[in-house]
Image (cartoon, rainbow, N blue to C red; front, side, top):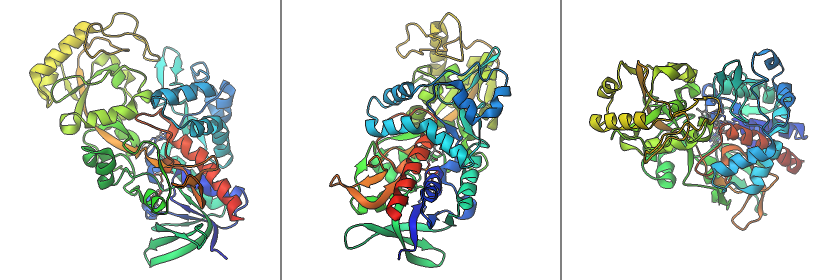
Amino acid sequence: MPDYDVIVVGAGNAALAASVAARNAGAERVLVLEKAPEAMRGGNTHYSGGLLRIAFDRVDEILHLVPKARELPGFVEGIEAYPRDAFMADLKRMTANRTDPELAEILVANSYATASWMADQGIRFEPAISLGAVRVGNLIKWPKGAIIRAVHEGVGLSRMWFTAAERKGVTIRYGAAATRLVLDGAGRVCGVAVRDATGLHEVAGRAIVLGCGGFEANAAWRAQYLGRPWDHAKVRGTPHNQGDGLRMACEIGAMPWGQWSGCHATPINAEAPPFGDRQLTDKTNRLSYPYGVMINRAGLRFVDEGEDQAFFTYAKFGGIILNQPGGVAYQIFDSKVRHLLEPRYATSDPIAAASLAELVDRIDVDREAARRTLEQYNAAAGEGLFNPGDRDGLATRGLALGKSNWAQRLDTPPFLAWPVTGGITFSFGGLKINDRAQVVGTNWEPIAGLYTCGEMVGGLFHSNYPGGSGLMSGAVFGRIAGASAARDGK
Ligand SMILES: Cc1cc2nc3c(=O)[nH]c(=O)nc-3n(C[C@H](O)[C@H](O)[C@H](O)COP(=O)(O)OP(=O)(O)OC[C@H]3O[C@@H](n4cnc5c(N)ncnc54)[C@H](O)[C@@H]3O)c2cc1C
């Protein structure tokens, strides 16, 4: 008899959702293998903002998840419905229509039900007030669909998942890395080889769920699949997501799926550490650039900072910044908008100056070009009403590279500059799965006994990503993978 009904590899949001779902679906013996030591447990989930993108039709559906938010002044009034077709349209727009339609449908259609299910498992939520929300008069304007997060963000989400799994009687082994999938004579996955402090062992299981992240922390894989200069990128999260699960699955014939040359990367503090800091977590993000401009070392702007709200551009702008000279850029604001900057800007000191010319003198850029860029930007800045809560159409006129929204003049001292680089969050390339989250082989047949979820699922995201979709995808496919594996494991 196998040692376990279901073995789950990894201990982030997706894997722990799978472990709980497996127990709920009747698997009696469920094992979670976590490569990291206990003090480093929880994968990228620990470092995340805990934000979930959810489709919903009525405000009371959101209030069901965050009942206390009713008392928050301006909360209810500032929320707009985010129906399923709006979530789907965002996914398609972000990915240039490349999102896998079947997976996208599963993600969108199950988002609200899965968030409710998470609440039933003991995951508590709160309004994600310090992320994309801005106060406009008496209203809190929410980025559509990205309204709630786990209490205490990723740190809280991870902790609550471990508590939920332990309460369900899931066995968790720390410092236990899966190194290989074990097959029986019929080609069915029937266990994993594990390396831990005591050596190498094989653990037998009726079904295996891989939830062990992408390859974002592996410099060689980044060089191989993403190309230069990604091997030099700072990693925003765990050092443990090295592509182990992808390698193990591909070794036994799993089909790679999705955009292997793509990843999620965001503008972060240029001084951020090489891997995520467990206390700072996602506070190195610098996402208020729509209200200012960004220039590179050549003194030039290089993106339309106001193309859309940050949650629709941040995941691609990180990579564009990393590809600028030296991998850095400066975000420049004037004091009119300082109150709109996300609170996480306070985790590093800006360079400040009384004039734009002086500011340019203090940063590491081609000064003449930078002055010219800022003068041209100011001359082209829009006229009309600035509305930080929505795309306001306040666009520059006549610039070769325009700014489409929020293009106010930079005219109110002191002027502020934050140096940023692009930090990788997670890789987009993954494995092909079916609607049961079962891994599909290169023969287009499901691989018996093998399931996957989370960052390891390929096909959903290409080149860009709507904020809050990673955790939602992890929970949706984790829940499906765990329940499917439990049925296999009986
Ligand atoms: C700074 C930051 C902020 C983010 N903010 C958000 C947000 O607000 N909203 C959102 O939707 N997404 C966010 N994301 C993305 C999101 O956190 C991840 O996509 C998501 O947590 C991935 O979940 P996962 O379970 O697939 O992987 P992870 O949470 O990374 O878990 C992978 C697990 O596998 C383990 N592991 C790896 N290899 C092995 C092995 N060989 N054997 C055993 N275990 C192994 C790891 O140690 C880890 O426990 C953020 C990410 C970062 C880094």
